[in-house]
Image (cartoon, rainbow, N blue to C red; front, side):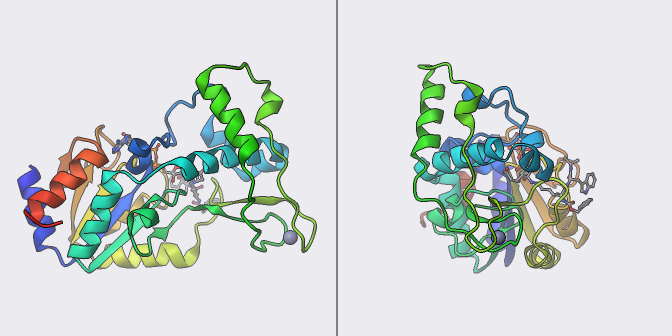
Length: 267
Ligand code: BJW
Ligand code: ZN
């Protein structure tokens, strides 16, 4: 099966690499639907990632995102991210479309991933939408998270909260620059992703459950326009039916093997 996939990759001229949380799992970033552990075990990510949650408890939601930003800042891209950048180097018509809010594709050398769900590193005002500076100090969130992960302390729920910064322009609360449930995706990013999917001859769907719309339409668009869809995921997903090949394995093991098989002896 890897042989068929590598032949398709070698022969492709326009590739879309569509990634989800599983892409960064081996960098130590929990997937979205993984049970949260330690400090955050009692919370459901699908409930925290909403405008309603931010309105009801901005300090809780901001604290969660700052904790995650600290985790990502200390993480490194894994061999899967590096393999994606290698695909871009081998196939110049490659477009990376990510649902992830981390920056690990860029740090692995991908040039301009299309971000469907925003970024942990682009806070903005919740009232006037003005971009806000990325806070310099995340040590509170880091130390609380670290202590909890180590099991050394039994933190109070209040320990997880962190007051969001205040917008210098209008006095509104600064919020994470991500797309929450019920919010529209950035129109230019969604259009660019749909266009790339409609034009590609091969789409690699990596580490996504394929249940969150409209992002989950991207592989469907590619398949509808005649592209081959290859999925890389250790588990069955909602995309199994449209994938011509399902490579069951992790991103950091399958992607480098795929690149090595497609272009043997090359980096
Ligand atoms: C590995 C691995 C390893 C593990 N290697 N793999 C149509 C039908 C039904 C519902 C809707 C619909 N259209 C819209 C909706 C509503 C909603 C939606 O889709 N809900 C579904 C849950 C049912 N969508 C929206 O609200 C979107 N907005 C919208 O549609 O606006 C228009 C509108 C407005 C108002 C009213 C109505 C319509 C917005 C969606 C925004 C999603 N945002 C989040 C949070 C971002 C910020 C944050 O990170 O906190 O984005 S939710 C979360 O899910 C996050 C992710 O990007 C996204 C996708 O998750 P992903 O990446 O697939 O992760 P997981 O955890 O689900 O899966 C991980 C996978 O990795 C698994 O398969 C593992 O097996 C695998 N894996 N280890 C490879 N080592
Ligand atoms: Zn403002």
